[in-house]
Every structure is written in C-alpha cells, then in structure tokens.
Length: 133
Image (cartoon, rainbow, N blue to C red):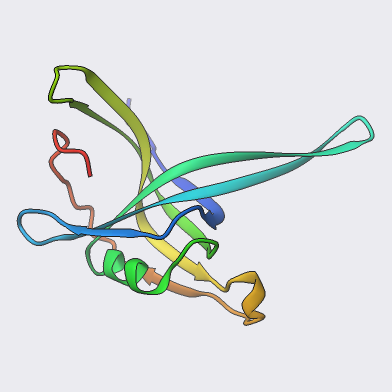
C-alpha cells in the first residue's frame, strides 16, 4: 500500500535559522517552530505548544537564513522524516523533523505589516542521514 506524508504547520520561530552547507555545497537551514493550540477545558481556556524542528534546503534555505529570525511567523509545508545516526561513542540516536518543501513568511506581529511572502523550492533533496545537521 502506498503512503502519504504531508505536513502543514503555522507557528513562530523559536530560534534564528542556522544556515550550513553540505559537502557538495547545498545550503541547509534549520530552525525550531512553536505551534500553539488553544482549547477550552470546562470554563478554562488552555494553550498547548508543540515544538518542531524544521529543515530547509537550497535557495529557500538561504532565504530563510537571510530574512527570518526568532519570533517570525511562518507557514511550513513539507513531510515528516525520522533521522537516525550513531554518536562517536556508539549510542544510537534518532529524531523527527519536518523537511520543508515551501515556507511562507508571515510578518512579525510588532511590524504591523500585512501580507505573506512565499519562498518555495520544490526540490526534494536528500542528505547524508549519518551526519547530524
């Protein structure tokens, strides 16, 4: 049976994007995203926050590194991926992250600007899963 893996998130960056380059020169940016969910429990309004790691490749990664910073709002469309690697002392590690296919920039709340800017590379680039980014 074929699978389907699509994720769409709207949230705010929890840290500035970190821009790096793979050995072959491909730009890779990574950042954290906080996605909030508000709900009512009885008479009380509650908020739950989910923290997600995002990875972006190519030109889009360079744009994220140049124009985004902690607190910026974004809409991320991509796929869920589990990365596995082994540490230098032999411990096995893994983590889930979103590999972004498009990132739509939203204005910072205090900017007062309106509108959104979409930066999209629809390249599905692979990277060495043995090396943490």
